[in-house]
Image (cartoon, rainbow, N blue to C red; front, side, top):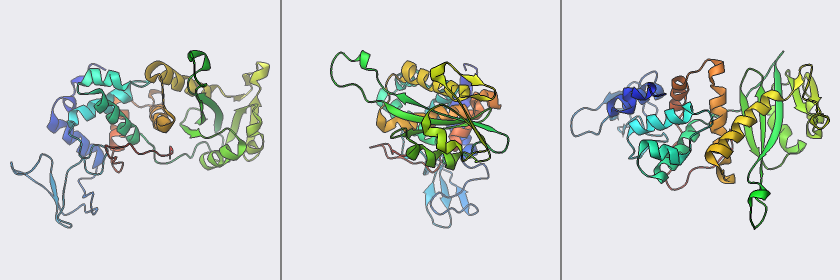
Length: 307
């Protein structure tokens, strides 16, 4: 990581701006106001802010940060580059407090930046996973405090998270209100190709849903059965292990309001992991390209589903 941090994009504002322009405008600049891509002119001179362009169709001016999570931010682009890189190169995440220590500025600034970067890591589409000859595992877990950690007061509420993982492939996780067939079926059949081989534990939630796929085999954990032939949920449980180590060990506490954003973060790093051929910097570049079209106000981060 130290060698990557010597990259000029983390220290030189013009290099950082050029790097963002290459990620967001791979085919050249276009106007975020009207979409014009031909009649745009880079503005020069001291009278214009750095990186400004003029659209000769709608006559508006813009920079690469317009309509992105960085819009109207007074934070230097070098720090945005560094924050995106640090969050994408840390397998279990990085706390806002640690980000604040490394980059300087206030803790509140680091916290807001990280939530906006998580929005950039939001995939925008769920699936499809699986297909003919492929295996998809499904499972659910609960995220939240433990009653034994409370000296007094009500038992902390736990939030349900369902994940679908294609073996040697990608994951889609979702914060769900409850774990019932009625709640999970619309997600599963939308995300997973029905030609897939579906693998779950012995929960009755999946029994009827499984009939809609090529095959559906289960393992009975309550009988100490974890693998039977090609039936197992080891892959999805490995994903949950990373998620929980990140939440318990790095973030310590995740609110219901922001849980979906954290799932976007962990899904993104898993989907562009080293085992699939992506380096930390390649992962960072993909996340940087995702900042466009996800502008957030600085008063209240937008809340939404992981879609």
